[in-house]
Length: 349
Image (cartoon, rainbow, N blue to C red; front, side, top):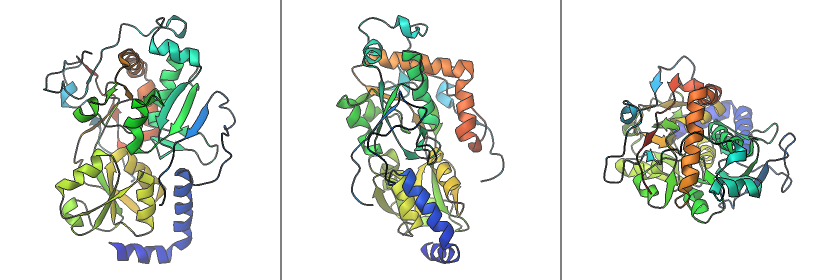
């Protein structure tokens, strides 16, 4: 598949250069003043994590993001690890910012003055830096704004720390951030290290390939190079496809850079992420049936159960008042109509 990409680039070099420049800007490679804060977000601080060196049209069918596990509504944990999607139930109704429980994690965050969050700044639609105004925005980010609003009465009291997928657990364990919302799949193994909110989105692993390549499955990519970010369930899943050549990268966007340079033949990842790439590069397409169920949750330090319960109360409000649906339509509506996942509770400290 590399040869057709070379020919395509020869015919459209200027377009490719523009796309690559936009990709690099979203990846945070464009220069900016240290500690700068874009206009309109004076309460929002930005902190960049250490970065590794180097490198459709048409309506989609409606999907039920609740999944089979949520078909009967809020269910209790039943499996040996307690059902990875089962979280801690909210403690009643969501309190007002002025009535946060004394001594709670939320009260301490309010006293500090900002909610510290680990995010992506280069995952278009989920968490990416707007090249026009420098704002970090997306579906993941909207969830964090809702939590900020519940704690402070202000959705913009966020202190962003830009992290890679591989850094998500570490920044929670170390206490560098309060929450991580970065296309974070809930798994039993991760519950051993951190805690999760209830599921706020269900993604599925697919493939991004050159448009017209004819590839639709991993079988079509035998002997080809397939990129996925380090420290993700996506990269681990490539072990089940021995015919492909796994190529790890620090971030999804670095995978896209390698793809546009012809150094890899395909990218695999969650449909949410790949949809953003396809929007950036019109020469690509997302193909295949979903190969996995990827339930996204907000990551929290495992010792802060009260914060998990609070975030779950915020998510309940987002589902009930239409906030979730509005955010979905803004960022992910191209994937088809959807309903918010039904929460599963039953986990105990």
